[in-house]
Figure (cartoon, rainbow, N blue to C red):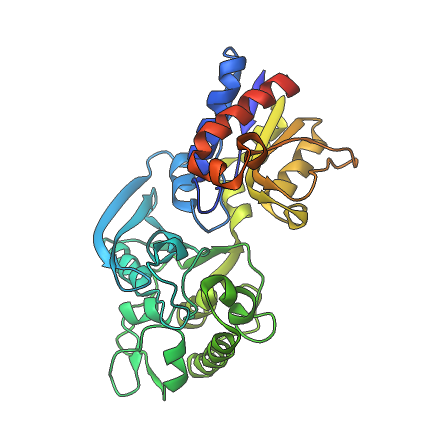
Length: 364
């Protein structure tokens, strides 16, 4: 049999490639003669760099050294070079929420993201792809743009963190690096605008530790920054990664693209699923939103077109995965296999192998 394993990352636990590998080990422990293809996916957030590296022959990973983490502690910076002079940077890698020693919704910064982008441009990158997602900050990429040369109108550095944007009197773009000649693409699965009731601070700020007062402060600061940078703050996706989508659209005329669609095209996912006997997919938490435009739901629909059997593996299941015809799909939750959230989180690879073995017994 031909088995395709194409999960998203289990955010905060394992990147997609490790998830796929563990599921494959479990499947092959039951059916060692099957052909198993690993096609890890991502949506622009955590695991995007790994998924693209696994998909593109000739990809080269570059270590930048220590850059500024979201809480200003040093953290390693990495970017990926693809054939044709394309540089891929993942915001979550150096500016992600798990890197925070202590949550700081008002002061967390994307400065390190800008440092990595600068390194890629100075190495000769001709096109830039930035994965947005999993950010610790709500600074509209002001930190990243500061690292790339954006200054206050009087020439002084921009303040770090979203709250400080409220005090800006003007901006000086004269030292801001130009975008690469091939342009900038932003990968995200978020349609939120920059500010307002559905914006970055209101929707995502609480996940980063923002109190109601913090949310109001950040939302006002983002709106003020939008006026100064004069960009399309209402554009869907500009609220991605704490408003980082807006910063790059306004400063560099970047283009926003659904991350899952980009990865699916890059990896030839639809073609691989069409020729499979079984598709195994999954994510850290499968819920009612998973079937509304997200990766897993889209893969279920693709599989249905080609009569491919589907299994869903998730850290937690709060909704039943359903096939296109309305029938329940085979599924497994690591929390159920392990007996608790703590046990599943302590050794997710073990329980992913168990899930893979169970899938082989049920779907073959």
